[in-house]
Image (cartoon, rainbow, N blue to C red; front, side, top):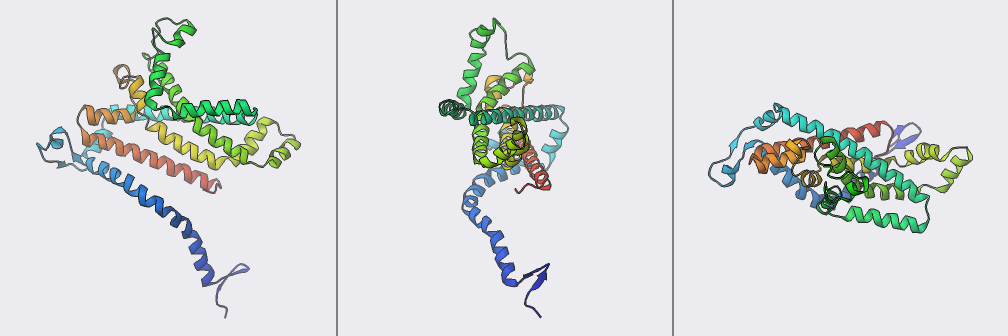
Length: 311
């Protein structure tokens, strides 16, 4: 009798199984140092957020005037029964989806452009993109507000729209704020995809050209499939950043726009927690945001794995 189990034409011995298990566990061992720092750093705030969300925690409890009262899922029931919450949630999802698509389109187009320009234009474009990416959100929002100012803004002067208020209409406001967010976000997508394109062997693109593929077909049929792991990373990062956008909306719309028409979920949570002193309810909104982002990430990765991507 042999010492192992035959699987097809290959014998799987206990030693081979142990080596395979050790190989699978090795990547997790490499992650332990980072996990030792990140799990306490992010785990404790998330734990406290979930804890506050099941308590009636207001200004009286913060000041110590009254004890905290455990209310279970009452805060979540209040959210689910609040039409304003659903309105803001749907508005946030739509706004974030538009931002992700615009960021990916701008970043991918400029990444391809960088591969087709000379060293000097490529360097200038990289420096300009890094400047946009490095600018603080508060600073960038203030600059864009000045550019679109109704009286002194450069945009109105160039377009001849004297006195036009870009921050009055809901959709125009979302467009201006969205352009600001994309301006902050596209450099990471651009540089990430540019690095991925540079890593593609030139022989692959030459073979596609010899087969008669145009530049457009080479991009969609050759470059994009080879960049899918990188696209996955930038999509997930963009969704997380754009879904929880706060600074640009809060600064440029003065807390949510006219009658709160431009409120997104993160601003809504801030206003509920710190504006109305409903800290438990605000924590519940933040927990819902976290669960939505986690669900999207898991569903997206699972869909890619079913499609054959090695993630």
